[in-house]
Amino acid sequence: MMKIICVCGARPNFMKIAPLMKEFNACKQIEAILVHTGQHYDNHMSHLFFEQLNIPTPDINLEVGSGSHAIQTAEVMRRFEPILLEHKPDYVLVVGDVNSTIACGLVAVKLGVKLIHVEAGLRSFDRSMPEEINRLLTDSISDLMFVTEQSGVDNLMREGVNPEKIHLVGNLMIDTLMANRDKAAESNILTMLGLERKKYATVTLHRPSNVDNRDNLERIFNALDIIQKDMKIVFPMHPRTKTNLNTFGLQAQIIAMQNMLLLEPVGYLEFLKLTDNAAFMITDSGGIQEETTILGIPCMTLRGNTERPVTIYEGTNQLVKLTIENIVGAYNELKSKNFEVIGRMPLFWDGHAAERIVEVILNKHVIT
Ligand code: UD1
Ligand code: UDP
Image (cartoon, rainbow, N blue to C red; front, side, top):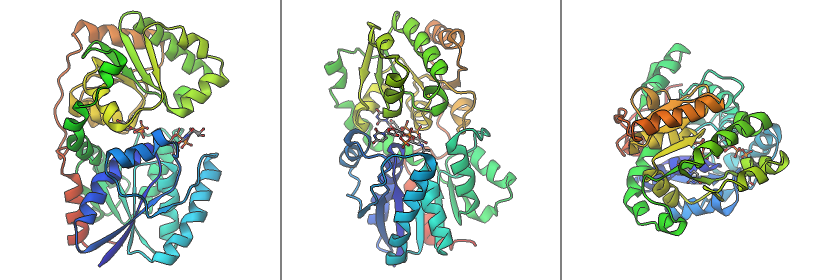
């Protein structure tokens, strides 16, 4: 029996861990132990996803909560080490690029436990992004790497990683999307919010470069103000953004926007329904760039780069730089095309990534 400790901590981790836990639990050769670091902890940032996505209750919750990068990372490490010493797993599996990912990865390798990284190889080439540092460091200590798109394979090869460690398997985010699309269609969130299909846009923002900087956040809000005069906007607001809105004194401006629906973060099913029926999205989320590609929804990503270039080359995503002219210009351009864009499905984004991952783990020995 192979023992794997699987780690999740923040919202985008839950969609990735859900299909994996299902596959692991169906596999007789694998014992999977689920550790939640507690990086995200509000009901609507954490527990709700366990309920909606049928993720087993974590065996262990480290309850680290929020803090500076150093405090949060250190606290996860401090609390994760005794878990490994007690359970002595064969592998630790981490997903994505959040602080919990690198923290648990570091603890594992220092104790001589093999590390599996799911969503390896993605690079924005922007080292001012905390996630880019987490990605580079996690990949550099991983024994087995599962990659969502060819660019990730190319990046790892260029960095000199042994090709036997690298496996292009597709995208767990899309496994979850495909498994839940029908269920999400039953959500009554559009009716509740008085929204009509394709007559509104959905917005999410949480990248520090956009929301921790007053000028940038104000610039985005000014652009949203212009857009909402033409089309309704629904904006489930990330707690980081909400905090900054208050700190910067920008609440009054956004509350005054008549066609702007501000919400707390919503559950996965409700959000999928909001995405699937939107005319277009405005976001800086990693996962949403991928989901809109599969749903065929135009996505304006308010960033200067993306670690997920396949969503641009094959999908429905475009990068939009942070000026009012660029954001409103991109909106007008989409409007002139009646919000119709054509994309295609990237290789292996077919709902079967978790099966491929389990097959590789069972069939291949980890290369050291
Ligand atoms: C984290 C990840 C980011 C990911 C995002 C997904 C890192 C470095 N960043 O960013 O890569 O895209 O999650 O959403 O790991 N807060 C709450 N309730 C919660 C969680 C957080 O109120 O349940 C507030 C706290 O004030 C906290 C702030 O949000 O300080 C930021 O949380 P944190 O996990 O540090 O970073 P995120 O911006 O969420
Ligand atoms: N999401 C959600 N509710 C929301 C906003 C987003 O369920 O109110 C989902 C979204 O569909 C995607 C994931 O959260 O599956 C993306 O997480 P996030 O944007 O927080 O992180 P990132 O992908 O940028 O790391």
